[in-house]
Image (cartoon, rainbow over all chains, first blue to last red; front, side, top):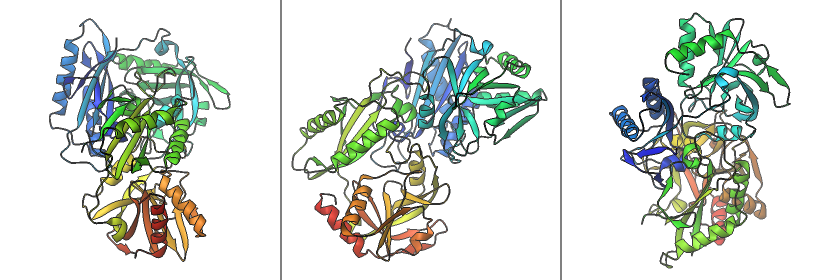
Length: 285
Length: 285
């Protein structure tokens, strides 16, 4: 089932070559889980879009949220209601431009909304855990672009290109100073002695919506959480490791293959299982 | 005169939304001056494309150069031969993909070739010199992406968005450690006591084709050249400053407005004029 697409509310498959999303990556995206036709954590996704738009000087129409909901409604009307889960991808670009980096203030943004089938994971990684790789590719320290989900994603592309075996489901990436940041498509957490850890993301990385939810749930459960700069050595001593995003929810990590091929292993632990259950109760699983 | 466009050799205006150039900036571009229908420094542009493609794992067809020349020939056949100069933009992307950063090895690249009118500069900046701004936006240190002309250009977009007055023609950008790198759309040189200086570009920045030509011409003229890490203070003591790219050739810089609004001024000097003449003799002016 190929994705169905609306561009600025109209059924289209393609975007003008002059779009600044293509030319410069001048745009943002969100990948959202649709559960029974309802976008999960909608408000959080919209807020991240708005924050990103402000950072990238992309002027959103005041009614952007309503426009996106109308797009979603149009797309859903073409699909069978029986599909439990689907993937909604929203891309907003700074619109079409001429040569050169300067923006014409009058140019409207382009709004692309796509509905795709939910991925199937027959090996049940959420239950069984996954093997990850420690990537050689590094993330540049770019505080001005950190946290938001912009279209300049070459670093993720390069990191993901480091392996092709399906036995590895995710890659963990460090920044150019050697600190853990995230997975290529997910955020990273680990536990040790009952404390939950996750890299701070004010220098690089994407602040995932599920990451925020995990932080909130941990607080509610009284699980202490530390955000900071940690090297990969922190994983050596971890009791539990997991990655998360809006589509996979939480995948426990049971093995990590380092660049020198040495391996770390973990069991799926109680804090991971507890957070999976709590997310599941909110429709995220 | 809007640009005329070929996508994979066919007359098209738009690219599928699934293109990885749009989704991730997974692609490269070249902006080339056409002089009397001849692409200036063609071989150097092709070499940079090939080097970039290797870095980004974009598998170019063996006959890519021939394909691009055929595209150019097709585009030129639709235009009056009397146009002295035109702008040729080539974009190569990793082609269309599904969700996720992983690439399907079988997916062909997308090849976009555009012909546009040459920009007109009535104020003759090449003769009279320009005013530049020292930008607040910084470039991240990303050696893995340095030098090549990839589609992840948000840093340039943000730097260029810092000013809107037409009195400022270019912005100079520093890296996150405070060293001079380049202009938003050009490379930077300055002279002091007969020595030519330019930032090294192995940590960030684009290695411009005209930059390489200036380096070669300086060598041929016996002008000593130093590439290195320099702070903006190096410009204080400069006798001459200029920026260059394939479309503007060399623009002398006669004034720089710093972030605190303090100003530096320079005259257009003999080394700048000499290099302009030498480039002009090679069809670059």
